[in-house]
Length: 255
Image 1 (cartoon, helix red, strand yellow):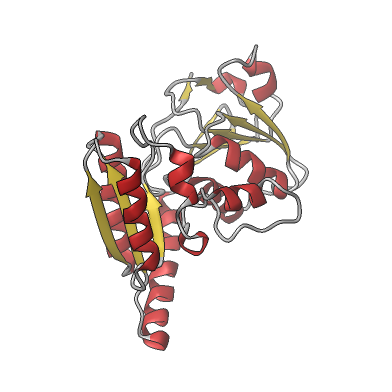
Image 2 (spheres, rainbow, N blue to C red):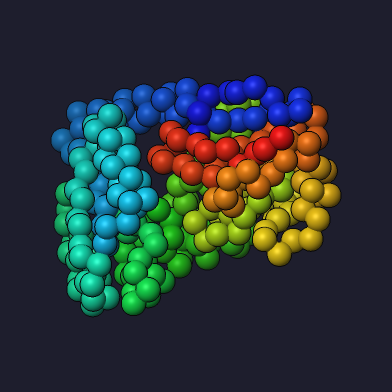
């Protein structure tokens, strides 16, 4: 996400570069205070399977972000053909490691591995991606608070909040329904008392829905999917087509 940018047909397009930098500065202070008070530095372990270029890029950005704020990072690179049993054993080792306080398993995993099974083996207290079934389940239920929220959706809500945009009572449209972004961000918007509609590849005439929205979250992972003319004047739009640790955005909007 990057800093506030020119409007699309008088709508407010939110990116968030400056906001992300502010958040990182705040985290750096918190990390330093934790270290001074408890003599501990937070440790993040990232598990990556195979050599997908996009996954390698994401992990590289996470490593860089950790270095900026003073978090210790540990990358565990496993071969494409690693077995599910071997991967889960590595997760268990990280669960038991007292110097690891957060665990991320980079998705997607190879097809021979059951993602849900692997994610459910992460200690819920270290599930900083918020993808453990218990965390996701609590997110989907009214009045429940998961220990951790999925990072990109949480960042999106943070952007809206720090941009002074009221969510309560607004019509919000989420474009995309992925487990990583679209679905959890729609649940978070519901928790913030928005009226939420999810638009996806099977939605007929999406422009008729999008043009009524006060808030549009573009999270379909496909460039140039939304026309600027579909966004009503005064609406807020956050584009999450490609997001690397809250720093990089590729537009999903075309004229």
